[in-house]
Length: 98
Image (cartoon, rainbow, N blue to C red; front, side, top):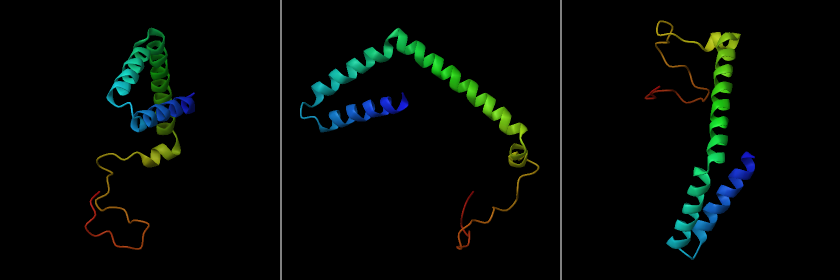
């Protein structure tokens, strides 16, 4: 579904940018897109998707925090390093802000 939406968005953007019809066609496409977006079934689906995304985010965040990796990544104000970590490149990290 996401792939189809991205394809349609790209198609619409390409049409608008490449169209010789100009501003009128752009306004027509914009008005139609606004009508579709404001349709109750689209808004309902968007709300359901947002709620599901929030739920998955919260569950994933909780799982990560309770894992060993999450415990290693968890840094409190007292644990914060005083010097920046060495970068993987061979160049010195002088003048770099973190």
